[in-house]
Every structure is written in C-alpha cells, then in structure tokens.
Figure (tube, each protein chain N blue to C red):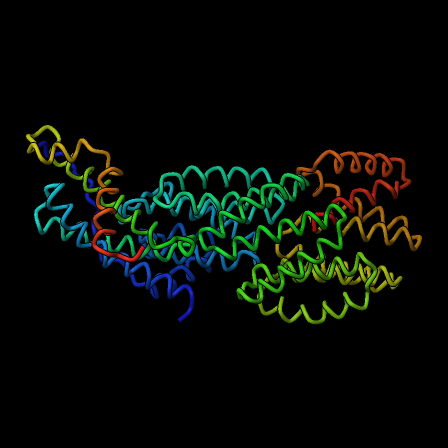
Length: 369
Length: 120
C-alpha cells in the first residue's frame, strides 16, 4: 500500500433542493462584492446550489440578459478558482460547461458576438469531459447557429438547422428542435422570403403553445407581427400585437416585449403618424437600454434620426446619430454595416447627413431585430 | 404527471435496475469490500439524482442513462483501486480487470442488465 491520497468521491452533508433554490435566489440578489464576502455562508461549495443557480440563470435570461451574463461569469470564475471538494465525478466540469453556455447565450443576446464565441468554446471544452457530452454539445451548436444568424450567414444556418433539429428530435428534445425551426424561419424572413417565413413562424407559434414554451412563443409572436407589418397588413399586425402583449408580459420576456414595442413604433411610422412613432421608438429604446441591448439602442437612435430628417429637424437628427456612433463603433459589424457607418460619419463631418447611409445602417440593425 | 416528472421517474427506475449489477461488479470485478461498495453506490446515487435534474437531462433516454451510470461506476471504481494499490501487490483477478478499459467492462455489464430483462 502506497499511502497516497485515494480520490474516492466523498459524501458531504449536502443541502436540499429547496434550500439550494432559496440560496441561489439570495446569491443572485447580492452584488458581486457581497457575494465574494459571503461566499462561505452561501453554500457555494454545494453542487445542489449550482444546479439551482443554473436553472435560475436560464429563467432570468430573457428578462435581464446583462445581469445573467455577469452572474454566470462570476459564478463560473468562482467555481474555476475554488474547486470545491463536494463535487462528485463529472459535476465540476458539467457546471463549468453549463455556466459558460449561459454566459455565451447572454452575450449573444447582448450582441457581444466575440465574447459569445469565447464562452461557447469554453463550454464545449468542459462538456467534453462529462458523461452526456453529445446532448450538451448539441445545445452549444444551437447557440452557435444563433450567432451565425446575427452574422447574417443565412444559407449556412438553414442548411445546418435541419440535421441539428433531427438530432434534437431523436433525443426527444422537442423544445430545442423547435428552436431550430425558429432559426430557419428567421433566416427566411431576413432573406425576404416573407410568405414562407410567415408560414413557418405560424407553425412555430402553434407548436410552442402546444409545448408550453414561452421562451419560443414570445419571439415567434413578435416575428409574426413584424412580417404582417412588412407586408403592409397593418390592421392584422395591430390586432396580433394586442393579443401578444399580455402573453409577453406574463412570460417576463423583456427582450421580446421591447421588440414588440419597436414593431408598434414601425407600424405608427407606416401609417404616417410620425410624432407618435418617435415617442413609441423612444419608449422601446428605453426598454432596450434597461436590459442592456446596446445594439438595439443604437439602431433606434438612427431610426429616430431618419424620422427627424423627414420632418425637417436636421440638427436634432444629428444629435441622435452622434449618440449612436460610439455604441456602433464598439460593436463588431459585418462589412456592409461598417461601410454604411463610414459614409454616415463622413456626411456628419460635412454637416449634411447622408440619408441613404443612415438608412443602410439602421436597416442593417433592423434586420437583426 | 408532467413530462419532467415522468423523466425523473424513469431515471430512478433505471437506477434501481442497474444498482444490483453495479454492486456485483464492484465486489466481483473491482475487489471492493461490501462496506466500500455500499459507500461507492451511495455516492453514485447522489450524483445520479442530480444528473437526472441537469439542464439537458430531459433529452436523455433510459438506455443512455443506463450506459452512463455503468460507465461512471466502472471508470471511478477502476481509478479508485488503481490509486489504492499503487506500488503494492494486486491480486491476479483484480489486475486483469484493472487492465481492461472501463468502457469495455461497462458494455459487458450492460449486456447483463439487458439479459436480466430491464426495459430498454
């Protein structure tokens, strides 16, 4: 006998699922500094607490993506640094993978695509060390596909969504399979295949209702309303928006709710109610600001600028554009966005706003909405 | 019963069916004493109850769960005995088992569970 330490997983006293959930709630309610001070009292060495934390972060994702990203990052770094001894078998690797996936998902929603990719890579590296790697890696693939939608790689997304959907269906994960259909419908919308897209989104809405998935139902409803709006079917869009609003409020999906308000502002604009439209855009913008979606805040600055130009308010329009440019400069845009921004900067320098460049730039962001 | 609950029930049924085979393997293949095997199984049960509630776990079929628990049991039982006997004498039978990949032993055990009539 060598007398070396034998790594037999030990059974600690543990905490109940109920206590873990209460603790997770308390942790998420504390500031980052408070958490660091109180870590010893917060059962942050218990896997059950991490299970509850991951579930709660997932639940708050569409309500507060900025906070979710910060929370997931803090907990990931804590677990990475501390390596608590009470974790059994693959649990530490699993929670590191899950927290990285949550941080990556939140970063994607916040339009921080480089960060999102980094987190998704980390997630994959950890999940590969766990026992059910294939199912979890399929979830990472879905997030990577969502990033590619934002990067406008629509053909590739449509091609890849089919096998990924099949993989989810084979493993019985209907909600994830439905997310693949959602992405496919979103790509059809972005490529102006509106009738096909509407058909797919309508089917997604029906299936999301059947599954009881508010996570998919809310953005799918917003997309259906947007398409009716694009098709000039204003009455239908308004009627659907009235139906969707309470559903979105109930689901606490602030991202989808803000996008719905954006859609309503667009409808007001289409019906030439410009002053009301500007007010509605500003309300939607405030909502995006509160949840940390800076790309959308910038896009609405540009749309308002366009509306102000339409009503002859050049100087105010210039201020709106100047407010958007620093945010846009921090975002990683595809070449068409960068080109439009360069034109707009140049026109601002000449004190004569290039409306086409402005429209190209906000059109680029609207497509992403 | 909701779907999540059904899946958890299924996971626990898998655990009940598989534990006797794991116990036999720990004692017969990996040379555990009975108290050691029982402590190992307790740990495995705690881990498995949390695995069944993981975020992606709803997508796991019963047969996959069974493969996972058998693989984890063999992997960690082997690692435990290797660490315990490092530098010391090892009985021939145990040495043979420790030289086999845990995946291989797990597949053999899976065959036994199936033969015993477990639902797959």
